[in-house]
Image (cartoon, rainbow, N blue to C red; front, side, top):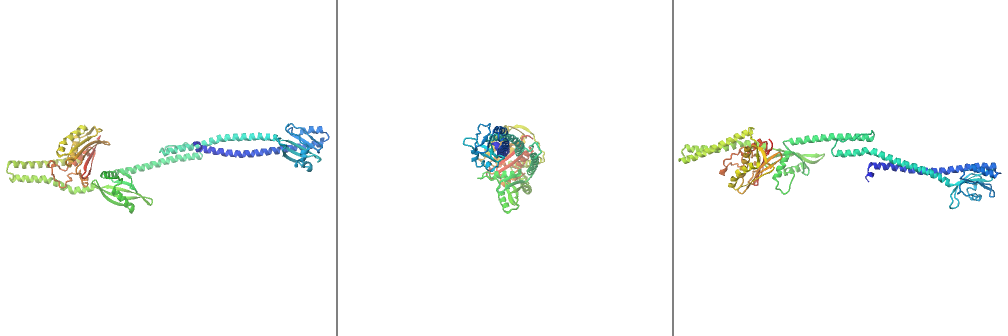
Length: 589
């Protein structure tokens, strides 16, 4: 079945059908022609014989024996001749054909055509049938020269039919040989024509799979050879253009990845078609903030609203959005497909640092002044009380001196942390790298805070990924990171809450995370938690005496320690649900 569907089968069948049809028509015409030709030739031969016998009769009419012998020599042995001068006088020459009967004068006289030979004196040719069961005969008659009688020569049609059969056999043999040769030639020709086409089909399939180095061998210089050359040229052109497109795509992708601004391309339905890493950060933050929603939305709501306005107004629009404490300016421009808007491209610029710097510039002096004013005021007040002898007893003076000593220590600690932080930010931090067993290392850190957590009624959980068995880092600095994060988590978690400490394997490094179920951090404060002196408690009061030593520098130092290890730290929080600090340290420094 597949053979008849192929070009070889169709071309072979077409050529064979056309040749067979032509041979069929030619055979019919040849058979008809040769059959008529044999009859006409036989009639001409018989008529010539009759004329010769007529001349013999004129010469030897008186001697019948000589006349018969001469007639036998003149005529064909398979034929029979009848010489009639009338009903009472006729002679018949013998024939070698046993199936050829002797016909008397009455039969010729009764035949309307043959009777005209004697009556009108003209030649007659006729094919006649004898009685039933006998073969037909061909009869010719010619009058004698004197007009007194006629010569009739006839022979059986079997002789003509034998000649026709031989001719028919030769014609059919020739036609059969022509069909066989045509079949072989057509199949050979079809194969020669379709072989390059099959190769082109295979090469086209290879091109469809992206293999553009496929080439078709050129064996001829006809139209098929030119088609092969065009196909090879097409493969080279496709490879060139696709490489150019891939280069353009990689260049565009590289540009998008290296952009500081986020780029999101969407269609009219709001499906995200393209985004770069800064835009993905925005989408991930939105998904984190709305992960408790009933239904999942790919495109954030601010972008959806802006997209509808852009499609409706067909112009560039801008809006601002705040997400997880970060400020984003979104500029959206319509994308046209000829005259129709097919989507939009949004550029997202993170303005958090600019807003943060503006805020820090305003708040830094006030925060430092406030942080230093309290201990300085206490030093000044308690020292004046001692100088003015307000404290009379020695115990009171010792108590005031102890307060002055504690506040001076606090000022010294604040100054030392500021100096450490300045050295870290200047890149002068020195790391003492060691390869440590993570399970025992984390067990020591968790055990250190177990007592503090029990005193406040906070449940402390820890989980160490077995995939992180050993890691290389500065143990003292990383312990300081965990200490700051766990201390903050316990401090901001109410009694009965939980604090989770996790160490997991990440891509290219290990990840540490500290989560709590406390009050959380307000969204507007999230971008500033790693800044010096920044506190969510704007009053900067310390109601719990156990935590009166905080300076507001812990998270800033934590960030610098993590970055000194070439790592990164981030925070996610929802108000009244809890906060998660996550940092990543690479395996190899």
